Structure formats: C-alpha cells, structure tokens
Length: 328
Image 1 (tube, one colour):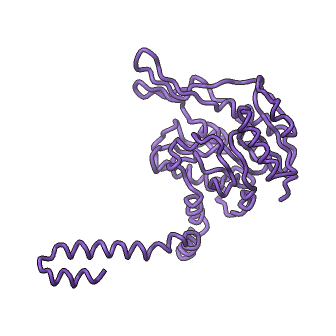
Image 2 (image 1 turned 60 degrees about the vertical axis):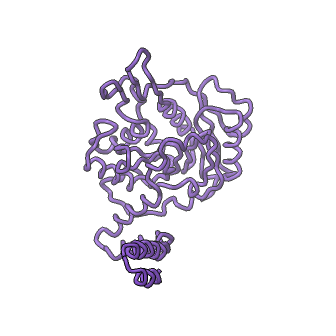
Image 3 (image 1 turned 90 degrees about the vertical axis):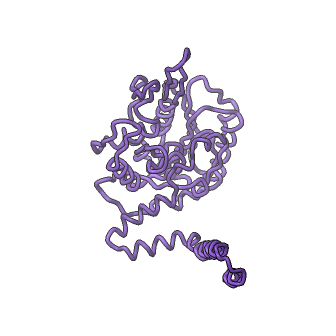
C-alpha cells in the first residue's frame, strides 16, 4: 500500500506546539498522503496551515454534559466533546477521495506506519456480525473490557482509526449526541451513552437492532454480543503497533488498564478460527504467547522454593530441616 493511496484526517483543537509536531510527523511517515486538518471556526491556523494540504473549518457545536452531580449548592459537571469530534471528523472524511484514510487527533504524533502491516491481515469473519467491508484498525486505548472494572459494552475506541474510506465515512455519518438524554442514579445524572458508545452503537444499529439501553447495561448476553461485533469489525493495536507517540500525557490517566489489548483481541479472534479445532487453537495461542511460556519454568521453580521453605519451617528436627532445605 502506497502513502499516496491514503488520506489523513487530523481533527481536534489547534495547539501551536502539539499540532505542529503532529502534522510534521505524519508528513515524515506518510510523505505522499493528503493531510486534511479539520477544526472549528475561530481556530488560529497561522502556524500550521503550511504543514497540511487542506484546512476545513466547521461551526462549533460546543460541549455537552456527560455527567452531573446535583448534591450541594453547586452541581458538579463533566463535559464531553463528542459532537465536536463527530462534526470535524465527518467534515474531513467528506473531502477524502482516496481508497484508504487514517483518522487522527491533533494531540498525537506518528512515529512510523507500522499499522499498515495489520490491515487486511485477519480474514476470518462471522458474517452475521460483520458491518464493514474490511476490519478497521483501532488504537486499543479506551476500548473498554466490560469484564474488568466498568461494565461498558460497545465501548470501542474512537481516537485513532485506519481503514477504507467508505467504512470510516459510514461509521462517522451518525446523528449528534442529544444534550438532554440522561440516566439518573440518585444524585447523579449520566448521559445515556459514553462518547465511544454513541459512535459505535449508532453505526452498528444501521444494520442490526442492538440491545443496550444505557451505558452500563450489565448483561452477559449484551457483553458477548459486544465482543462479537468488536471481533468482526475492528482490529485492536497497541501504541507501539500503531506507531503512535502521545503528546498529551493525561490521555493515559483514565484507567488504561481496563482496556482490551491486542493480545486479548487476538485470543478472541483465534476462538473464531478454531471453534471446532481445540488443538489448533492451543497451538496458535502458544505461538502468539511464546514469551509468556518461557516464564513458566521460572514460576514453577519460584513456587517450589517457597513450598519447600514453608514445609521445612514446620519441622521440629533441625537435622531433618537441613536435609529438606537442600532440595532448593
């Protein structure tokens, strides 16, 4: 795949230092790609306009309330920029005329184009869950695993994406998030869905009637369906696999450990391929996790030493204790 076949839509606020680093890094890694910078009216482009091929200015839809706590004299409010992201991303995608597109953010930089090695590498599908022509590559950050801490099904990342232009356009061609659609829990009010859920549920519901009435729907069936849609429509890549450099460090503060990893995604994908072939599944898991297997002898040795030491301490006879301790 040549870089001239790829367009890059960079969306978000324009920051004098970070956005310059962002655009320069993309030009270095994808020298022949068209770079489209999409932000909102009022942004200062004087320092970055020469670094991109096209600038798009959209009317700012503003923030919406994501969470509100009504206790005390003054309510505590947390806001979301999801509508800004939808508007700027879709405006940029409408200007893309190449087959492939990378959706990027102004607070990230590109170290290399390693993500291209993963596109179209996984060809097995369960067609009843497939809603894209070819799996979209996602950064795994913010793709929450609902089995770990937060029961957030369909919480697939929306930060960085790569795929076919038509697939990404279809994903982002969705309604804006309603500012008054809340779920109440005592003194707290939450938007019905998180920003990521809003994007992916609106896209997937173009094809299927998906059951997920609110952001923290706690149902094994909903979580199982969420994983099936994730496996058949996206591939999760780590920061290193995608070739990313984070310019805004606080992006990592929000419980990154609760997200699916590429290894998690791959293990679930392998279950699709080897649904009826247990030996094949075990063999492929071992192949992709061989580094962990190398640690098994060390772990066994460590546990054995601890057990022998504990047993020796319980023996009243000193001579017998010394003989037992020689075992480790």
